[in-house]
Image (cartoon, rainbow, N blue to C red):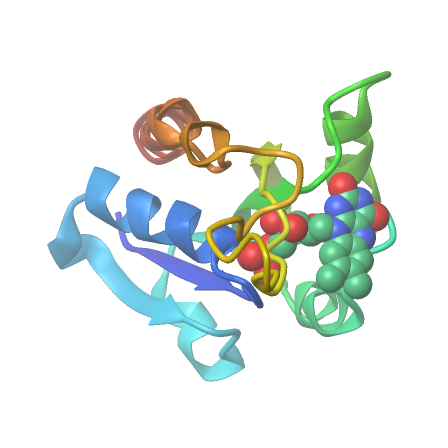
Length: 158
Ligand SMILES: Cc1cc2nc3c(=O)[nH]c(=O)nc-3n(C[C@H](O)[C@H](O)[C@H](O)COP(=O)(O)O)c2cc1C
């Protein structure tokens, strides 16, 4: 079964997930890895679509791409800065999924935290992420293990 991974990542958090999906699945079955590319869609049986959240959903370019998909199996994955309180992660997947027509099948969705990078401060040049020390920066190793398992579930069992 062929798959492709199409994503948008401004600060690299979602890209880290995308790389992990690629390494979790058979490389020979990957038909495309990179930014959104309509001409590459037909070659894959399942598309992993990745995004970083803005204003509680995906950005307009991600939404526009999702609206073009027809008769595809789609697995969504994304990163957000906020914690998963009151079903926040599920609500992001639901909002992003609103851009996908019912001709498609959404096989699953995965969200984890992605910390926001900030410019180094003069008196604190080593602090690059908000609200975290380095060891708790997300996506962390547990997030990557989780997206690996998610990718394999989507690919082998859905
Ligand atoms: C303009 C802007 C809006 C954002 N809006 C949200 C938001 O509504 N909810 C949230 O949890 N995180 C929000 N974030 C944080 C990003 O979703 C988060 O850092 C994500 O991991 C970025 O992904 P990327 O590194 O792949 O670009 C926002 C970030 C930016 C720059």
